[in-house]
Structure formats: structure tokens, C-alpha cells
Image (cartoon, rainbow, N blue to C red; front, side, top):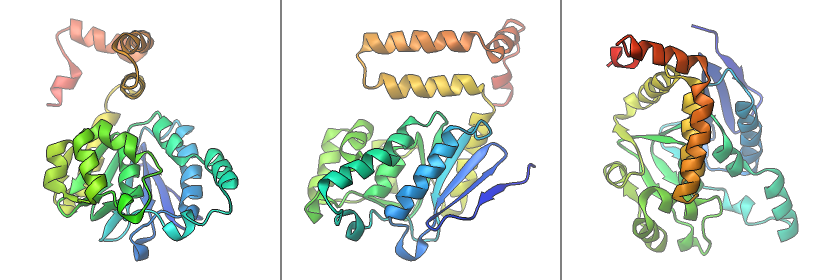
Length: 267
């Protein structure tokens, strides 16, 4: 096993990479890992580093402590911006949500406890979501006189549908693990002690596949979702042509022609 590399100079998160997996941990357990300005700035640094690091194949996002992945944003900070002009400028320069959505690596969210407000928005920026049985999801912003400002009104309906999203927003109704799985908000629900091992198992499965194919598949779905069918099919054609020229594709074709599909050997 390769030795882990850990960044210890952050105040609100920890970052470690080991054996091709990047681990980003929200680390404010004393306040349920709520998202503040310092966390925003530190996430921007980590996400930028992840994006440009060829050693990180998959990333796992999790929350420290026993009670929450992230219980929302620190409204005492985000609602006291010095002026709308400055606030817009800062957001443009530090677009953590744009960085999240633009990362080429598959992102796995390991979710437990409270996943509220910015926490659910962060989870929705990830590609796969694994939840423990104690998880609770909610978007309380409208009940506080505001609306989500980190993509929740756009990413949630695209994931669970318009009606269920509006119900959560209009009524501040929280949903548990069972309902989250039923509506497609999470991919799996596991016991709390199996949360990280399950996320790591999925990460290793992804890493066993051709990296270019994985990244192109993510890009095809991420970009194609907002295109017409014709545009999406053209995007798929372009990305497919990229994968066909890789050594992985040549080896896969050779194995298939020889009647030995390496992926089925592991099943």
C-alpha cells in the first residue's frame, strides 16, 4: 500500500490521498460541519488540486464526527456580505460549486446524520451518494426566508423530480434514508459502520476500469443532460471516438475477441 499524503494545514477540512483515492473530510464536527467562508476557501484549494492531480482517480467526500455530514451553511457569515457587488465578485472568484461540478474524476459522497442545506447541495455535486441508515436530508432555506444559493433548486429536481423537490422546499420536510433511496437521492443505504468501506469498495471498482472511459462516461452524462437528444448523441459520438483510440480499448477488444471479458471474471 502506498503511504498516504495528508494536508494538515487546513482549519475546516482535511485532505488525504491514498492508492488513487482522494479523501476530503469536512472537519467542523463541533458545529455539525456547517459550511462557512473558511471552508469555502479551503474547498476551492482542494478541488482545484484534485482537478489537476493525475494520481487521484476517484474522490470520496465525508463528514467528521458522529452527527452530521454537513448541517448547512453558517448564515451568520453568508448573510452579512459587505455589499452585493463584493459578494458577487467573491462568488465569481471562488466558485466552489462550479469546481465541484467540473471535476473530471468520479466523486462519491459518504453521507451520515444531518445532510441539510449546503450539505445536500454538496452531496448533489457528487456523482454517487452512499448513505448510512441514520441520514436525514432537508432544505430548510425557504422556511428561513431565503432560497438555496448553491445549486439546490437545479440539482435536486434533476435528481428526484420537480414535485418531491418542491415539497421539500415549500414545507421544510426532511426525508430519511429509506425515502431517499426510494426517490433516487442516494444509490445505497448501509449500516453506519459500513459507510466508508462501501464507498471505498465502489471507488476501487471504478478504479479497476479504464480511466479514460470512466471520465468520458461522466462527461457525456454531465454535459448531455442539459442538451437536446441530438446534441447529446453528437457529444457521445465525439467522446466515444476518444476512447476507441486508447490502449485500454485495444486490450478490451482483444480480450473480447478471444472470448475472455476481464470484467466478467470479477463477477
